[in-house]
Image 1 (tube, rainbow, N blue to C red):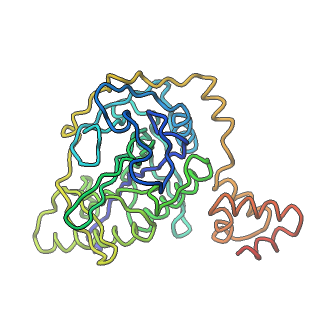
Image 2 (image 1 turned 90 degrees about the horizontal axis):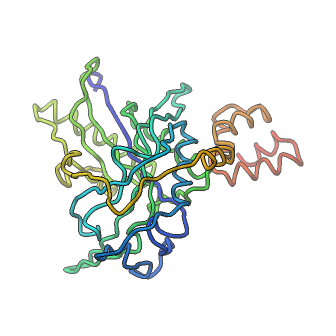
Image 3 (image 1 turned 180 degrees about the horizontal axis):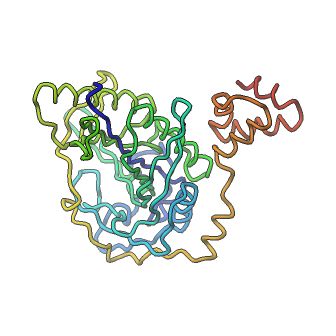
Length: 345
Protein backbone atom coordinates (compact mmCIF):
# COMPACT_ATOMS: atom_id res chain seq x y z
CA UNK A 1 0.00 0.00 0.00
CA UNK A 2 2.84 2.41 0.79
CA UNK A 3 4.02 2.18 -2.83
CA UNK A 4 0.87 3.87 -4.17
CA UNK A 5 -0.84 7.23 -3.85
CA UNK A 6 -4.61 7.58 -4.14
CA UNK A 7 -6.17 10.31 -6.30
CA UNK A 8 -9.83 11.18 -5.77
CA UNK A 9 -12.14 13.70 -7.40
CA UNK A 10 -15.83 14.03 -6.56
CA UNK A 11 -18.84 15.03 -8.63
CA UNK A 12 -21.62 16.03 -6.24
CA UNK A 13 -25.23 16.34 -7.38
CA UNK A 14 -27.43 18.66 -5.35
CA UNK A 15 -31.21 18.85 -5.80
CA UNK A 16 -32.28 22.50 -5.64
CA UNK A 17 -35.35 22.95 -3.45
CA UNK A 18 -37.33 25.04 -5.90
CA UNK A 19 -41.09 24.64 -5.91
CA UNK A 20 -41.16 23.75 -9.62
CA UNK A 21 -38.92 21.93 -12.07
CA UNK A 22 -36.14 23.51 -14.10
CA UNK A 23 -38.06 24.14 -17.33
CA UNK A 24 -41.75 23.76 -16.49
CA UNK A 25 -44.24 24.48 -13.68
CA UNK A 26 -44.58 20.88 -12.46
CA UNK A 27 -44.00 20.61 -8.68
CA UNK A 28 -40.89 18.94 -7.28
CA UNK A 29 -42.66 17.30 -4.30
CA UNK A 30 -40.96 14.08 -3.22
CA UNK A 31 -42.89 10.86 -2.51
CA UNK A 32 -46.14 11.51 -4.40
CA UNK A 33 -47.83 8.91 -6.60
CA UNK A 34 -45.73 7.98 -9.68
CA UNK A 35 -46.17 10.15 -12.77
CA UNK A 36 -48.33 12.79 -11.12
CA UNK A 37 -45.75 15.62 -11.29
CA UNK A 38 -45.43 15.38 -15.06
CA UNK A 39 -46.41 17.50 -18.06
CA UNK A 40 -45.63 17.53 -21.78
CA UNK A 41 -42.40 19.51 -21.20
CA UNK A 42 -40.69 17.31 -18.61
CA UNK A 43 -41.97 14.18 -20.36
CA UNK A 44 -40.08 15.27 -23.48
CA UNK A 45 -43.03 15.43 -25.88
CA UNK A 46 -42.27 16.68 -29.40
CA UNK A 47 -42.76 20.39 -30.07
CA UNK A 48 -42.67 21.65 -26.47
CA UNK A 49 -40.47 24.57 -25.42
CA UNK A 50 -38.73 24.84 -22.04
CA UNK A 51 -38.91 27.97 -19.87
CA UNK A 52 -36.07 28.46 -17.38
CA UNK A 53 -36.74 28.58 -13.62
CA UNK A 54 -35.22 31.86 -12.37
CA UNK A 55 -35.02 30.70 -8.74
CA UNK A 56 -32.87 27.73 -9.79
CA UNK A 57 -30.37 30.15 -11.37
CA UNK A 58 -30.31 32.19 -8.15
CA UNK A 59 -29.71 29.10 -5.99
CA UNK A 60 -26.95 27.82 -8.25
CA UNK A 61 -25.26 31.23 -8.18
CA UNK A 62 -25.44 31.34 -4.38
CA UNK A 63 -23.59 28.02 -4.26
CA UNK A 64 -20.89 29.43 -6.51
CA UNK A 65 -20.51 32.53 -4.36
CA UNK A 66 -20.24 30.47 -1.16
CA UNK A 67 -17.47 28.38 -2.73
CA UNK A 68 -15.50 31.42 -3.98
CA UNK A 69 -16.16 30.62 -7.63
CA UNK A 70 -15.96 32.94 -10.59
CA UNK A 71 -19.55 33.55 -11.69
CA UNK A 72 -19.96 33.78 -15.45
CA UNK A 73 -22.38 36.55 -16.37
CA UNK A 74 -23.37 34.56 -19.44
CA UNK A 75 -23.62 30.75 -19.44
CA UNK A 76 -25.09 28.32 -21.94
CA UNK A 77 -27.24 25.20 -21.67
CA UNK A 78 -26.18 22.23 -23.78
CA UNK A 79 -27.66 18.91 -24.76
CA UNK A 80 -25.76 15.90 -23.40
CA UNK A 81 -26.79 13.00 -25.60
CA UNK A 82 -26.99 9.48 -24.25
CA UNK A 83 -29.59 6.74 -24.02
CA UNK A 84 -30.91 5.63 -20.68
CA UNK A 85 -34.47 4.36 -20.28
CA UNK A 86 -35.18 6.96 -17.57
CA UNK A 87 -34.28 9.96 -19.79
CA UNK A 88 -37.50 11.13 -21.43
CA UNK A 89 -35.77 13.46 -23.93
CA UNK A 90 -33.04 10.95 -24.81
CA UNK A 91 -30.64 13.71 -23.83
CA UNK A 92 -29.92 15.63 -20.63
CA UNK A 93 -30.06 19.41 -20.50
CA UNK A 94 -26.80 20.41 -18.85
CA UNK A 95 -23.96 22.92 -19.25
CA UNK A 96 -20.61 22.17 -20.84
CA UNK A 97 -18.29 24.78 -22.37
CA UNK A 98 -19.75 27.77 -20.51
CA UNK A 99 -20.94 26.70 -17.04
CA UNK A 100 -22.45 29.08 -14.52
CA UNK A 101 -19.57 28.90 -11.99
CA UNK A 102 -15.87 28.00 -12.22
CA UNK A 103 -12.54 28.02 -10.35
CA UNK A 104 -13.62 27.89 -6.70
CA UNK A 105 -12.34 26.08 -3.64
CA UNK A 106 -13.34 24.58 -0.30
CA UNK A 107 -11.07 24.25 2.75
CA UNK A 108 -11.37 21.04 4.78
CA UNK A 109 -9.86 19.93 8.07
CA UNK A 110 -8.46 16.41 8.39
CA UNK A 111 -6.33 15.30 11.33
CA UNK A 112 -5.97 18.86 12.58
CA UNK A 113 -4.58 20.11 9.27
CA UNK A 114 -6.34 22.37 6.77
CA UNK A 115 -6.29 21.44 3.10
CA UNK A 116 -7.72 23.36 0.14
CA UNK A 117 -9.73 21.36 -2.40
CA UNK A 118 -10.22 23.02 -5.79
CA UNK A 119 -13.67 23.34 -7.35
CA UNK A 120 -13.44 22.98 -11.14
CA UNK A 121 -16.98 24.06 -11.95
CA UNK A 122 -20.61 24.20 -10.88
CA UNK A 123 -23.14 23.70 -13.62
CA UNK A 124 -26.90 23.38 -13.78
CA UNK A 125 -28.69 20.38 -15.23
CA UNK A 126 -31.86 18.30 -15.13
CA UNK A 127 -32.28 15.09 -13.18
CA UNK A 128 -33.47 11.89 -14.85
CA UNK A 129 -36.60 9.88 -14.10
CA UNK A 130 -36.56 6.68 -12.10
CA UNK A 131 -36.75 3.04 -13.16
CA UNK A 132 -38.60 0.65 -10.85
CA UNK A 133 -38.04 -3.08 -11.40
CA UNK A 134 -40.48 -5.64 -10.02
CA UNK A 135 -40.12 -9.24 -11.11
CA UNK A 136 -40.36 -9.46 -14.90
CA UNK A 137 -41.69 -5.91 -15.25
CA UNK A 138 -40.07 -2.50 -15.30
CA UNK A 139 -41.86 0.76 -14.66
CA UNK A 140 -40.90 4.37 -15.32
CA UNK A 141 -41.68 7.19 -12.90
CA UNK A 142 -41.09 10.66 -14.38
CA UNK A 143 -41.82 12.66 -11.22
CA UNK A 144 -38.08 13.30 -10.81
CA UNK A 145 -37.44 14.05 -14.49
CA UNK A 146 -36.19 17.64 -14.99
CA UNK A 147 -35.97 18.43 -11.27
CA UNK A 148 -33.21 21.09 -11.09
CA UNK A 149 -29.73 19.99 -10.07
CA UNK A 150 -26.37 21.56 -9.69
CA UNK A 151 -23.30 19.41 -10.21
CA UNK A 152 -20.27 20.51 -8.17
CA UNK A 153 -17.10 19.07 -9.71
CA UNK A 154 -13.93 19.04 -7.62
CA UNK A 155 -10.33 18.94 -8.74
CA UNK A 156 -8.63 15.54 -8.14
CA UNK A 157 -7.09 16.95 -4.95
CA UNK A 158 -8.16 14.34 -2.37
CA UNK A 159 -5.77 11.58 -1.36
CA UNK A 160 -7.86 9.40 0.97
CA UNK A 161 -11.41 8.36 1.74
CA UNK A 162 -11.18 10.43 4.94
CA UNK A 163 -10.45 13.58 2.93
CA UNK A 164 -13.34 12.80 0.56
CA UNK A 165 -15.77 12.42 3.46
CA UNK A 166 -14.50 15.62 5.11
CA UNK A 167 -15.01 17.47 1.81
CA UNK A 168 -18.54 16.08 1.41
CA UNK A 169 -19.54 16.95 4.97
CA UNK A 170 -18.25 20.50 4.58
CA UNK A 171 -19.99 20.90 1.22
CA UNK A 172 -23.25 19.44 2.57
CA UNK A 173 -23.23 21.90 5.48
CA UNK A 174 -22.71 24.86 3.13
CA UNK A 175 -25.50 24.06 0.65
CA UNK A 176 -27.96 23.37 3.50
CA UNK A 177 -26.96 26.62 5.26
CA UNK A 178 -27.62 28.47 2.02
CA UNK A 179 -31.18 27.11 1.99
CA UNK A 180 -30.86 25.92 -1.61
CA UNK A 181 -31.46 22.21 -0.80
CA UNK A 182 -32.84 20.10 2.02
CA UNK A 183 -29.70 17.94 1.74
CA UNK A 184 -31.67 14.71 2.33
CA UNK A 185 -29.24 11.99 1.24
CA UNK A 186 -31.74 9.13 1.60
CA UNK A 187 -34.07 10.85 -0.88
CA UNK A 188 -31.21 11.61 -3.28
CA UNK A 189 -31.10 15.37 -2.68
CA UNK A 190 -27.34 15.16 -2.09
CA UNK A 191 -25.38 12.36 -3.73
CA UNK A 192 -22.00 11.95 -5.32
CA UNK A 193 -19.94 10.07 -7.90
CA UNK A 194 -16.35 9.39 -6.89
CA UNK A 195 -13.53 9.14 -9.43
CA UNK A 196 -10.84 6.95 -7.85
CA UNK A 197 -7.41 6.02 -9.18
CA UNK A 198 -4.01 5.08 -7.78
CA UNK A 199 -0.52 5.80 -9.02
CA UNK A 200 3.04 5.03 -7.85
CA UNK A 201 4.12 7.49 -5.18
CA UNK A 202 5.98 10.38 -6.72
CA UNK A 203 4.47 9.84 -10.20
CA UNK A 204 3.20 12.94 -12.01
CA UNK A 205 0.65 11.22 -14.27
CA UNK A 206 -2.71 10.06 -12.99
CA UNK A 207 -3.63 6.40 -13.04
CA UNK A 208 -6.68 4.97 -14.81
CA UNK A 209 -9.78 5.94 -12.86
CA UNK A 210 -12.95 4.12 -11.96
CA UNK A 211 -16.13 6.13 -11.36
CA UNK A 212 -18.25 4.99 -8.41
CA UNK A 213 -21.84 6.06 -9.09
CA UNK A 214 -24.59 7.45 -6.85
CA UNK A 215 -23.11 7.20 -3.37
CA UNK A 216 -25.75 8.58 -1.01
CA UNK A 217 -24.29 8.46 2.51
CA UNK A 218 -21.03 9.54 4.09
CA UNK A 219 -20.48 6.01 5.38
CA UNK A 220 -20.97 4.50 1.93
CA UNK A 221 -18.55 7.02 0.42
CA UNK A 222 -15.89 5.99 2.94
CA UNK A 223 -16.42 2.27 2.48
CA UNK A 224 -16.77 2.35 -1.31
CA UNK A 225 -13.58 4.38 -1.82
CA UNK A 226 -11.59 2.23 0.63
CA UNK A 227 -12.76 -0.92 -1.16
CA UNK A 228 -11.97 0.50 -4.59
CA UNK A 229 -8.46 1.54 -3.53
CA UNK A 230 -7.77 -1.97 -2.23
CA UNK A 231 -9.26 -3.53 -5.40
CA UNK A 232 -7.03 -1.49 -7.68
CA UNK A 233 -3.93 -2.19 -5.57
CA UNK A 234 -4.63 -5.95 -5.66
CA UNK A 235 -5.19 -5.83 -9.42
CA UNK A 236 -1.88 -4.07 -10.06
CA UNK A 237 -0.07 -6.43 -7.69
CA UNK A 238 -1.43 -9.35 -9.74
CA UNK A 239 -0.25 -7.77 -12.99
CA UNK A 240 -3.76 -6.84 -14.15
CA UNK A 241 -4.61 -3.65 -16.03
CA UNK A 242 -7.04 -1.14 -14.51
CA UNK A 243 -9.74 -0.28 -17.05
CA UNK A 244 -11.67 2.98 -17.12
CA UNK A 245 -15.24 2.13 -16.20
CA UNK A 246 -18.28 3.03 -14.16
CA UNK A 247 -18.85 0.86 -11.08
CA UNK A 248 -21.73 0.50 -8.62
CA UNK A 249 -21.25 0.07 -4.89
CA UNK A 250 -23.15 -2.73 -3.12
CA UNK A 251 -23.45 -1.63 0.51
CA UNK A 252 -24.68 -5.05 1.67
CA UNK A 253 -21.68 -6.92 0.29
CA UNK A 254 -19.31 -3.93 0.63
CA UNK A 255 -17.97 -4.35 -2.90
CA UNK A 256 -17.94 -2.38 -6.15
CA UNK A 257 -19.01 -4.08 -9.37
CA UNK A 258 -18.61 -3.07 -13.00
CA UNK A 259 -21.66 -1.34 -14.50
CA UNK A 260 -20.44 -0.15 -17.92
CA UNK A 261 -17.46 1.32 -19.73
CA UNK A 262 -16.89 4.96 -18.79
CA UNK A 263 -17.99 7.42 -21.45
CA UNK A 264 -15.70 10.21 -22.60
CA UNK A 265 -16.78 13.76 -23.41
CA UNK A 266 -16.94 13.05 -27.14
CA UNK A 267 -19.36 10.18 -26.51
CA UNK A 268 -21.96 12.66 -25.26
CA UNK A 269 -21.87 14.82 -28.42
CA UNK A 270 -22.52 18.08 -26.53
CA UNK A 271 -23.99 20.98 -28.46
CA UNK A 272 -25.78 24.19 -27.34
CA UNK A 273 -29.50 23.64 -26.76
CA UNK A 274 -31.26 25.47 -29.60
CA UNK A 275 -34.42 25.96 -27.50
CA UNK A 276 -32.70 27.86 -24.68
CA UNK A 277 -31.21 31.34 -24.63
CA UNK A 278 -27.94 32.00 -22.76
CA UNK A 279 -28.38 32.56 -19.02
CA UNK A 280 -27.56 36.19 -18.24
CA UNK A 281 -27.01 37.43 -14.66
CA UNK A 282 -27.25 41.18 -14.19
CA UNK A 283 -24.88 43.15 -11.96
CA UNK A 284 -27.85 44.04 -9.73
CA UNK A 285 -28.81 40.39 -9.22
CA UNK A 286 -25.20 39.39 -8.57
CA UNK A 287 -24.74 42.13 -5.99
CA UNK A 288 -28.00 41.33 -4.20
CA UNK A 289 -27.33 37.58 -4.00
CA UNK A 290 -23.82 38.23 -2.72
CA UNK A 291 -25.08 40.52 0.04
CA UNK A 292 -27.75 38.01 1.09
CA UNK A 293 -25.31 35.15 1.72
CA UNK A 294 -25.67 33.84 5.30
CA UNK A 295 -22.76 33.32 7.67
CA UNK A 296 -21.26 30.01 6.53
CA UNK A 297 -20.37 27.08 8.83
CA UNK A 298 -16.60 27.68 8.97
CA UNK A 299 -16.96 31.35 9.93
CA UNK A 300 -19.72 30.56 12.41
CA UNK A 301 -17.59 27.85 14.03
CA UNK A 302 -14.72 30.28 14.60
CA UNK A 303 -17.12 32.74 16.19
CA UNK A 304 -18.50 30.03 18.48
CA UNK A 305 -14.95 29.08 19.52
CA UNK A 306 -14.41 32.70 20.57
CA UNK A 307 -17.74 32.72 22.45
CA UNK A 308 -17.22 29.44 24.32
CA UNK A 309 -13.52 28.64 24.37
CA UNK A 310 -14.38 25.16 23.03
CA UNK A 311 -11.79 23.20 21.04
CA UNK A 312 -12.48 23.08 17.32
CA UNK A 313 -13.83 19.46 17.11
CA UNK A 314 -16.53 20.28 19.68
CA UNK A 315 -17.39 23.65 18.14
CA UNK A 316 -17.70 21.87 14.79
CA UNK A 317 -20.55 19.78 16.25
CA UNK A 318 -22.50 22.96 17.03
CA UNK A 319 -22.49 24.04 13.36
CA UNK A 320 -23.21 20.65 11.79
CA UNK A 321 -26.71 21.87 10.98
CA UNK A 322 -28.05 25.38 10.68
CA UNK A 323 -30.96 24.49 13.00
CA UNK A 324 -28.59 23.35 15.75
CA UNK A 325 -26.38 26.43 15.36
CA UNK A 326 -29.43 28.71 15.49
CA UNK A 327 -30.67 26.92 18.62
CA UNK A 328 -27.30 27.30 20.33
CA UNK A 329 -27.06 30.98 19.47
CA UNK A 330 -30.58 31.75 20.69
CA UNK A 331 -30.02 29.90 23.97
CA UNK A 332 -26.53 31.35 24.48
CA UNK A 333 -27.99 34.85 24.27
CA UNK A 334 -29.91 34.14 27.52
CA UNK A 335 -27.46 31.92 29.41
CA UNK A 336 -23.79 31.05 29.80
CA UNK A 337 -22.58 30.14 26.28
CA UNK A 338 -20.18 27.44 27.47
CA UNK A 339 -22.87 25.74 29.58
CA UNK A 340 -25.30 25.82 26.66
CA UNK A 341 -22.64 24.33 24.36
CA UNK A 342 -21.86 21.55 26.86
CA UNK A 343 -25.58 20.80 27.23
CA UNK A 344 -25.98 20.40 23.45
CA UNK A 345 -22.78 18.33 23.15
